[in-house]
Image 1: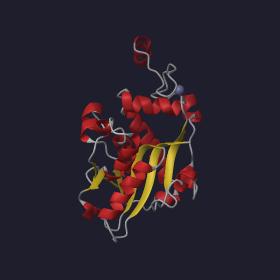
Image 2: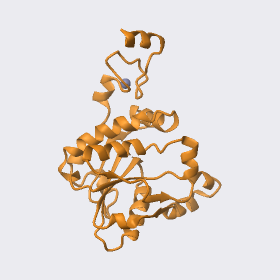
Image 3: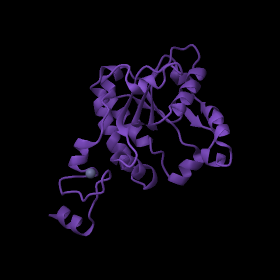
Length: 229
Ligand SMILES: [Zn+2]
């Protein structure tokens, strides 16, 4: 009754399709929950996400929760998460993917979770790293540690807007650094990001982690909210 009244005066909308939510729904409506385009990649070896890194950097396993399509509901979810302050979408998707990873044979050897970092300036602007809650919930589901103080972003993309595109692409490789590298020895890391497009960011992060942990048997897997097709 109270929720009914609350909805009457403050209607809530589905964060993926913008339709009114029913009383028994929260954040994402029932039809979106069934129709969002999940990949199921965490149960498939040599999936298209893993193939992105072939010949570039050694990645053990890689998966995304959803396929990303322009103007689709996944784009709206990510937009609400990144630009409209709906940080709880990260929590929701993290629980969703975390549960699925806990059922997959490929992710039961993960030791710790590292989010792809935001630069400090961007963090101040947005107020949160949109990947943080997502990554934390996956860590809870897998029962492993979460570390946001190992991989650091050192150059802000927003300060580079005046650079030519090519220069920006070249400089992106040098924009991460690793601190507290001792923690990494012998570990299998799950690197977590919001969306994978070309794979350049993950490649840059993985290369920094491998360099910092030279010859100490580091393994890296990857999980994201979405993969662009
Ligand atoms: Zn919906």
